[in-house]
Length: 193
Image (tube, rainbow, N blue to C red):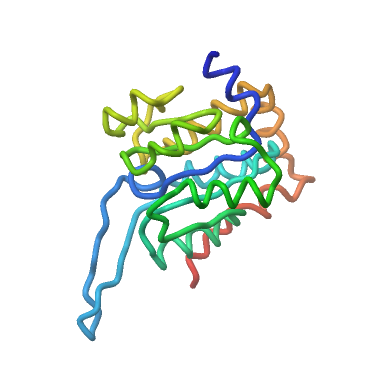
């Protein structure tokens, strides 16, 4: 089965965070009390892509092993439907998502970059690895993004799925239509200010 035929069936898109929606770097900055404050960089292309994916009918979320207030803020900005942090065994979260939505594994795409993502990638309908992924992850993937995590890999996955489903151009025009509230209702990017 080709990557395009797998992508046609996708209804749910789940991303890992570090190394997928970020470049994998984690900055820990000490505050006045000596506690660490975590900072990460997210690609704006991925944020807009998530808005396009939602317009295209995809249900989108994240599953990550780390617990991070930074990730929670970005997930809220992006209005992600599924947000699972602190997940050592990501199939637990996947099974919860499938139970809540009634979707099947064949209808699920997962985007990962490291070995913790392999259990999901081995079972989902469409496994995507980022350009910066570990070799074990790339070898399991049905599609490898042209861009690395934190530099548009998430958008690459969304564009690929929407193209396979024949909806990318329509969704872009819907987003750009000034009479539609699609653009104003998407990624507000307030960063919890």
